[in-house]
Length: 115
Length: 112
Image (cartoon, rainbow over all chains, first blue to last red; front, side, top):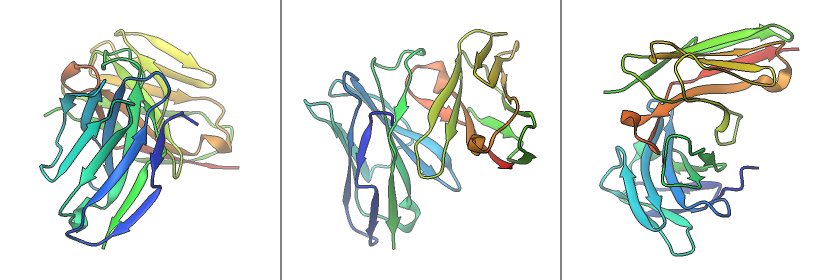
């Protein structure tokens, strides 16, 4: 158990819909990272928040957005869902803002299926 | 852009055998990380390497940071059934902390 929690574990929805994925980082960790894992693209970095502020951005679609709240939990919002958005979404957390020696601890993931 | 190429893509071995896998890149990395992902779980960090030439062990696992900084190797000795899973190499995108880029993974199957 990494100490990072993600809810829900599974989500099934229809194209065009909007969903929210939730992540609670390990106690004491200030950074939250979101990753998408799909069969064709592999594991891809989406976005990082550090202490409530956006710190780094990857290839995150404009239909996706995230935020980190004062209690440090984070939500990833996916809207106008398409079939290709079906994937595993992982949240990771680390103590610092992302220095090279910062270990990222991954949650168990949310499996999103878009029908 | 930056890419990490892992090989082999999959391996089927007998329990007790040693395993080697590697990761290469066309660009230099300042950090190499090796993660393992079990089915239905998130990746777990196995070994982190921060210096060219560094050799680091974690139990039966040994990883090396290549001298050219463009490759890394992971060896598992005396494999056991719980070694089954997908092994990923990773490094910081553009060598900036936080954003990780992952290889495609090596899927390991161990026959008892």
